[in-house]
Amino acid sequence: MRFIETWIPATLVSTRDLAPGIREFLIRPDQFDATAYPVGSHINVSVTIDGLPETRSYSLVGEASSHGFKIAVRRADDSRGGSRYMWQLAPGARLDITQPASLLAVDWSRENYCLIAGGIGITPILGAAQALARRGADVTLHYAIGSRAEAAYLDDLAGMLGDRLVVHASDEGQRLDLDALFASLTQGTLALFCGPMRMLDAARHAWIGAGHPLPDLRYETFGSSNTLPTEPFRVRLKGSNVELEIPRERSMLDVLNASGHDVMYDCKRGECGLCAIDVVEVDGEIDHRDVFFSDHQKESNQKICACVSRARGTITVDTLLRSDAV
Image (tube, rainbow, N blue to C red; front, side, top):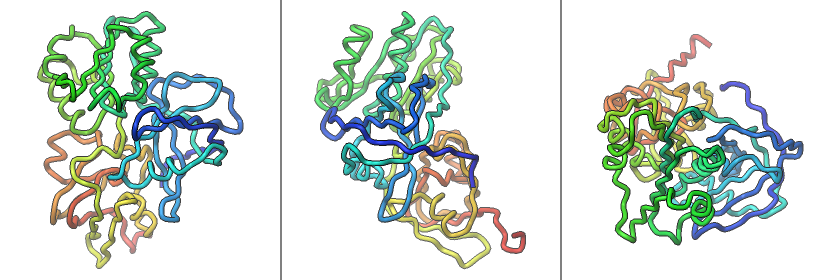
């Protein structure tokens, strides 16, 4: 069960390869009014994986356009199937999507802004860079990539920001030093971040270590960011003989709900915590992919966000659903 979500029909207008393994999709709803959406917005897309309906969330690229919604999807072999589904679509394909929504709050009154993007994390950061540049704000964007050849929107950003774009390409020996970067920022700087989970964890520690208040580090996430490989695992339900297998293409949340073990949810991005359930026992290892719990809470392994987090081996959980209470 979840809060009310409105789905609207749309058409895939066009696709464009931005870099090896990264493809841009222009999607236009049937009833489209080009209303501006907040920076950091995303849409959910209904996909089909192994014949089953699933939902995937993608950040909107750039500010609102009269042409439709743009998303960019990285083809990931170690994923739950969403990118493979999107990549097989051709222009003219019909889709169901949600209206844009954002959990990223930007304070436009700050004097200084620092944007940090890791890889495909540039997708929500591009819109923030456009909005801040248009406002004449003091903004610098640090873009961490493996190489310039695999970076999306690099030319657009260079034309927009000039020397305020700092590229950290690993193959050039220019790796991003978050400790040094955050230590150099003045107090009151607002940082906006999007990147893989390990990079976000490092950013949090560096931000606090530099003496900045944690609320001034704001981030957009993507649920495919992982520490362990995406592989099947098993979930036992406390107080029953039920044991479920979670295939690599589906989330624990989807399997539990499809099996009648109702778990509430909302964002499906590991941000709101509504789908968090109690962990009773771990026979293996949990891969916490959410940004809701603190490092200490993740280390305790007492709860898990069922929408994005996974495991290796078998975990026993308590959904608090009791048959005698139904």
